[in-house]
Image (tube, rainbow, N blue to C red; front, top):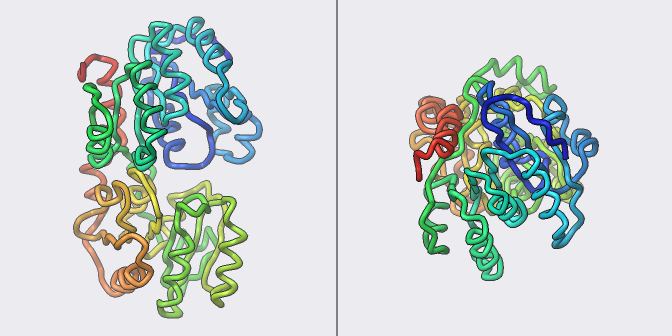
Length: 366
């Protein structure tokens, strides 16, 4: 690991499981990008290699000098802890910030034994705590690392309080860059993505995996008028299955697979409605990004999704209800709402989030 951090501000290291397109990973990149100019920030990915990750996610390219990959093999690898201890002893970071249980297990302990003064662990979802083995493992990891434990949503905070007898828990809600995600010309956005101009477009962004529920949205489309189409942004292991489902339901001309989209502001700008049909979530970024672009949003009521929706323009649907999803999307087609952007600006601006994390290292939550 490159241990040459030369600037005179704080030395901050974020540790993630992997660097692939996703909400947690995007948030970590934002924390790197928006760090103070005097601070030096690294992101350490336990899994993967640099070139492979950049190839799969070109957004990493501008930050390639600030990302490090340990290429961890599957399973428990104690040598990763040794690597991290050596790196932390060499770098002497002021802050080590872990995201998810794997990084907490490896880097949280390494940070404590090397005397890193500020240790932060952010819990981005809590549904995994329903598993007794995972809950016990996380309890041990928290005891070993003793970080400031951050919940990214009120619901996650409550679940952590129920699961653990741990004192130092605070809430810092996820934020999005409202200067980047803002309204734009729908006509221009659709032209840029080669999308139809005469259709009512429902958009969905996320990994094409079972947990993200794109199959539920495709099934709901069978109950909607012909002028409504679905556009999916993202890649994943379920793409072939979703394409086959689309074909079986005779929807091939109404479901568009864009693959990985780098310019998500343009994607959101092309939509009439954004839909999050997930089976599980923490506090998602995609609903916030869409609403920052002034796009009304319909979402399944899972995790902390309800906290992200504008109470005026957002619509929650009972988990797993295909009919409910179709009805909500149809109602959105026929109504015009007040701006959801104002709600995001007031409650989820990323500048506020970054400031709150900076406050931890200043002792504000001690």
